[in-house]
Image (cartoon, rainbow, N blue to C red; front, side, top):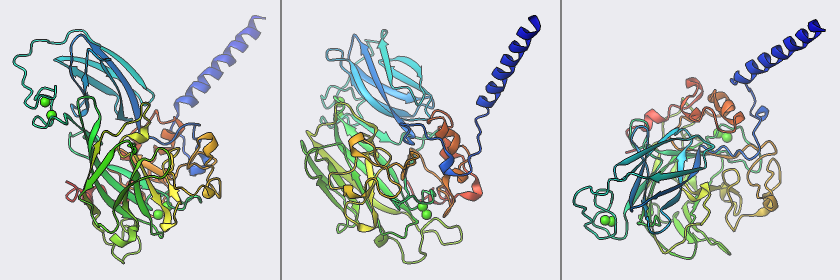
Length: 429
Ligand SMILES: [Ca+2]
Ligand SMILES: [Ca+2]
Ligand SMILES: [Ca+2]
Ligand SMILES: [Ca+2]
């Protein structure tokens, strides 16, 4: 009897050890992107929203910084009215945040699955000398990024500064054969962005400045690029500095929830030289300087931000392609809403499994996307090399539902990616 028990115990221990080993061995080699196990609900997001609720007995500015001191967000804690209550956008590779309020600093660890934080500032330094508020907007000069403009107080940058506290650009990358699957090199169209918003004391956005580069055209199709903003026809939009006026437009979407749409360009090929055929995807071809669209400035007046924001409401908002100038053939990131003028006849055809009735958009049956966003610069895969081959930890990141290898996009196999970041170092300021 004892012997049997011992054997049972031994095999149980062996089983635990074996499983333990195999579950920690998470560098699973996945050779084909179709072999990925994309968890339901995982949409390849490299950023996430964190709802921050903070209180204190006094009012003032809360400054949120990363470990390296780079500022992530600034907003006003109003002790008379609900304190501080905002959802902020975070790069998923940020693991540590500092919240500074009137000299008091609170530290919290965060992960990609953190969605809410409650903070109480119990020891604010009330007497911090003479307070100066030059423009009288209620935010002291010390924290007012626009100390002589009473309409705005804070400047929020997207992406936040990199680890060296330098400005960096985010990357928007597409596969452009939707509703057919492509080769997952994610270099058919790539834009880089640096966007900042200027907000007032109540964190309402009043100005948006968009700095966009059209960096890679590895497409046979002549695609258009658009951005759907979270602001609707409750407000007024003005814009200036449109580059290539004949291509640029800003308008309200049709129908209900008529969000502002920026048409950055209708025909991408018009900006690129005729030769070579593909721009900045093949090593042996000459480099094409990315096209800078000048700074696009959107002025919002009294336009409402959604009460329950989603990630698509934060820069770079909801960017999309219109494929080869075919009206309504839009490509958005996974589960981002299309515009109201999308041609729904494409949904559910070929490899697409979009189903508006179940709020499912722009995913294959295996949950693969047609677009990726990264809050950083990125050396994209060379022509026809799948992202899963170019980035060794991409598969592990996906299989973990985005919890592990959150900076997978910084660690490529050098010979499988285009040497892009170094080449634009001097071009992007
Ligand atoms: Ca002020
Ligand atoms: Ca001000
Ligand atoms: Ca492709
Ligand atoms: Ca390609």
